[in-house]
Image (cartoon, rainbow, N blue to C red; front, side, top):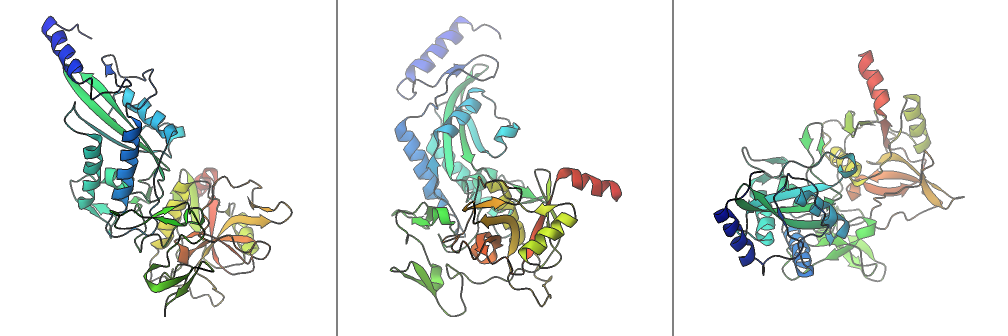
Length: 413
């Protein structure tokens, strides 16, 4: 790096001195080769933390069309550390490829120092939504929408942000970084997954986030951990019974939240997620019949260990072509078996591999019938969140194949 001349040093001194009231002690000017700095603080105060997460939640409630499963965001100090580490590198490259960070989502912005606030940056990300076409799940030509889709990714429930000063040549720049968990912007078969499910707000919240968070300036509600069992919505076509915490649905509507029953046709194809192959069955079967059929083909009933897999499978199943109707007379539901069952002796759900679940996505009020409904399905009427069901029910099912099995198929073609 070349040395600064006398006038340049004097200019830099005045630039930093004049900005002291604006900066916190965590902000540093990076003049060396980009790399991880020693500071692990975000350069943001507690008030800014509150304002950033509040702004995220307000904007998430304003999406059009309205979101049925949009979760309330919470501030995460762990994500702050990740955001600060990336900010201190002064890199504006795409998201890191570190395998440990592959489930983290990122939004970044850089601009000349003191020309824009963090609030303005977040607003600019949300304004990208003007170019996002929800029905097609695509961005307009020559436009950028990925900051917007990450900001409004329904299942991204934690956020942490940081801000850093960087020196490039003689110019002082500011880098803004937000990290999100679970991350979003996933693709399936070359198509972007839509960031949320459209519908009446809070009508498709999961069991762990069955409350509905609203503020005076919120257009729609956000799914949150409930303060009482009845913080739920029955949508536009139902009435909530406060004493029983159950929905009474109007004519032609059904489901736990009185959402319109959707007909999901049969289709069979591969969906690859992190090297694993998931295939929808070409027939219906009981749970244990489905388990056997997957094993006969060298696979297992699908196991869902994180939000990414859940998001992609739910999106894929919701997009099946309506022309491929199931004609099997024994077809009983529009749901799909996965490899999770309740073990009475262990008093817990276990994957068929014997593992304890470290992630779950049970629909609101589920599981509700342990000992009778011991097998788990992806339930169409709950946006393919999980439901415990009688194991003798004849469902379609999803088989999962490891990368080594997929490689053998490809060799044999």
